View 1 (cartoon, rainbow, N blue to C red):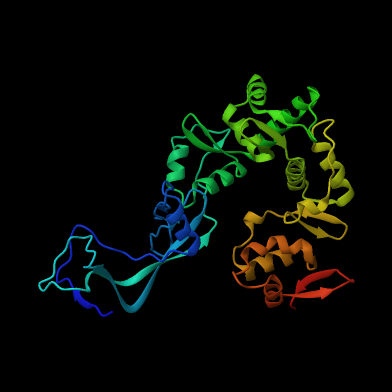
View 2: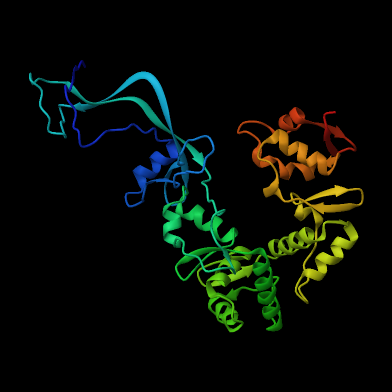
Length: 361
């Protein structure tokens, strides 16, 4: 079948068509979720950039997934055509006839989508406890954050976020530790089996309020350290143990491993007996002989060459499985972690299944 192709001479001034490539999973969402939202979101403009550019991060979101959006320029011209046999736009051509296509939009670029985990920047949010802030609400922060709703909710509690008097805050680590300690101590005093029992959320919130803790802060802490359903919670003891271990390590500077384990055990609530495993803290410590010291991943460079320099300044020889957690999130997509290690360092075998990573020179 042949078609006659025409092109409009002028275009509507009140709207512009743009072309967006949909990946298969997003196309399935559009086809199969008639009531599901599809949002284009961006972060606020960054006016503090030193390179003079004020750019925002643009994404496309469903309720639970995020795609990063970027403009892909090309030399081809893309035409959007109206099939005049169907003619749902109600347009006309000067010489009507069968099998005609009328071009009503042109494009020299397309928007390309790539899967993303979304971004949630809490650096500018006020801390609680602290001075009362005049900032944004939870809803406003969600609307202005380039991430899907469900991914936002998962990261929000894990980062210690809460809303108090219609203002968002990030709980301080010391406050989280204090309240978590009180929650566990109170539960144990009431014969709660923290290893296997599920508790009632309403009863927990009532108990916490009786201790004069902020109820929304309690909600954040229990979501951060427990498996929560609609009405019940079950403590995640391994996550709780890691939290107290990290806090103890941060306060210890450089300390022998046996002494650190004693301090870690002492930091836990009384009668709260859970296994302590140093490997649970990988990504937060370096070794110096028979001692360990705290590493703050957030203070390390995001540039891999400088990050390796910082790590080798702390220690010249790293166990392979202890350095990997500190670099794996910065390995380019499609590359293996060993190829990155070999580029910036040396990997040596020291046993049948043991390796160390050392500087190249």
